[in-house]
Structures are given as structure tokens and as C-alpha cells.
View 1 (spheres, rainbow, N blue to C red):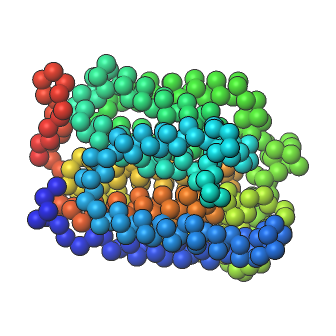
View 2 (view 1 turned 180 degrees about the vertical axis):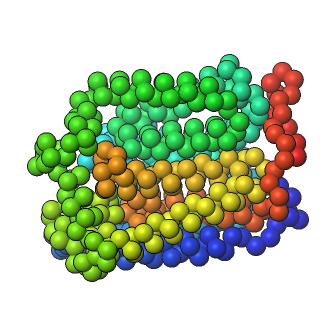
Length: 388
């Protein structure tokens, strides 16, 4: 990174992000209106909570991370990753960890709750980007690249499985594999990873039979429409009843105690029911325009750490959105994953905005032409030099 090459940030990305967040708050306000009143006697409880514990600290995080040269995060990536692991372990400590929805995923300190897995998504991407850059072409070597990568990913996966939070695990694995591929991993490594992933999935089903029940409910929602298939069935009804133009903002019927998790997992279904196909389609265009801008900054990134970081964040957001929306329209089984920048969740919004700040800082150093050459391996598998 050369400070002389610094220029204006990607304002197209910043504007698109601002529009998405404003739209997300409008949708959250409508989706959570009834639930907030029923649970807390305040129709705007979820919006207020998201504003105070998500948006305000998230904007502050974005302003800070977009100012700090991205290379700083490479220097602290290992320690940030270790800190995330430490927080992830704390969720299992009695009196600190909190179980919600059957998952031990939260820590509570001074009445403030925090979800460490959200921070892990970002810190692991930063650490893995640094790790892959340092390995260089060495990642093509089975012993020097592939096996350490599997061990690293396996250690992180064990902590996530222990919670358990399979949705978050799928995001972390997808981001890691996307970065591993972009770094130059051979295809046969990816096939081996696929085989390992399939075996792990089989083991997870054996350990917890409810996961098999979710798959069965996904394949045949009508088989247990009042049990495990209920949410999927109600979500499809909500999306279908929206039609082309929707029932109107605030007019959802499913949010009146019919559809579970209307402020979190199921918020897309409420959005589709109220706003209809046209507005929902425009939302998807906006979301994936943001992904496109992130990938464009990755393509013209000043170095491989920046490129890998941007790719990891793009895969993270895109995969999470796909899983959330796919579950609402019957493409994938339900996993309890929120919709980025829209669903209720202060920790998620805070970390997502911090990640976008890093992308905006990377955008200040992008080149007019993409990186040339590849990372080359030096003798004795030492740190890798970059060549353009």
C-alpha cells in the first residue's frame, strides 16, 4: 500500500449502503410493530433497540474503520482472531453465556448482550486473508497449504458446532473456501473439502436428529405443517400473498402471530407480503449491487490481503442473504440466519458496518488495473513475496 496512491473512497458503495440501511429500518419498523407491542408494550421497541445498540455504534465503527488504513487490520488480525475465539469460549461460561432459541450463542455483561460469532465472521476473514497471503503459492502444497487450512477451519468449526449454530458455520466455511479458491487453491483441494463437508454434515445429522427433521420438512412442508414445517409453510404463504404490488406497508397478516421470528429470520417474508414482487426485486438488485461494488474493489485491490479480505466479506454477505431468502421461498432448509442490514440484531449490524468500513478504506487505494502476477513461494516456505 502506497499512501501516495490514495484517492476518494467508493461513494457509489457508500450511497447504496445508506439506502439499504434506511430501507431496512422501514421494513423492520413495520415487521416488528405487532411483536414489539405484544412482548414489551412498545410497538417501536425493536427499532429503538436496533438504533441504539446496532446502527449508532455501527456507524461509529464504519467511520473509524474507513479512516484506518486497511493494512493495520492485517497487523492485528491474529490478535483480533484470538480475541474472538476467547469471546466464543465465554458463551459456555455460566453466568456470562446466555442461551436463546436453543443456541448458546450470547454473552451478557452489564445487561448488554453480544454475539461473539458475528465478530468471528469478520476477524476470521481478516486473519485468513493474512494467512493465505503469507502462504502464497504454498497453499497448492498439500502439507504446507491444504492440511493447515483444514485444521484451522476445523478448530473454528468445532466451537461453532458446540453452540450449536449451523447457519453461522455455513457462512464461515463458505467465506473461507471462497478466499481459499481466489488465493489459488487447486480444484482437487476443493473436491476434498467438499467430501469432508459432506461427511461432517452426515455426522451432525446423526448427533442431532432434529436437523434431519428440518430437511424432511424442507422437502415436504405439508407433512408436519403445524410442527417443524410450520415456519417454512407460513413464510411461503406470506411471500405468495404479496403478489406483484403487495398488501401495502404495515398491512401484513402473517406478522399477527402467524409467522415466527418476523423481526429476524422471517423479515424477508413480511417484506414480500407487504411490498410485493416489484419492490422486493428492486431490494435484491440493490443488495447485489453492493456485492458487485465490493467485488469490484477486490478486483482492483492494491494487494492480495485487500483482495482476499474483500472477497471474504462479499461471500459472507451474499451467502447469508441467499440462505435467509432461500429459506423463505423454499429453496433451502431453515437455519435461523438473519438478513444482513435488515433483520433485527444489534451485534450483526454493528459488525457488518465495521466490515463495510474496511471495504471503503480498501476502495481508497484501488488501482486502475488489477494485480498482475501471482504470489510466489520462496525457499524453505518462508513468508511469500508479492510480484506484479
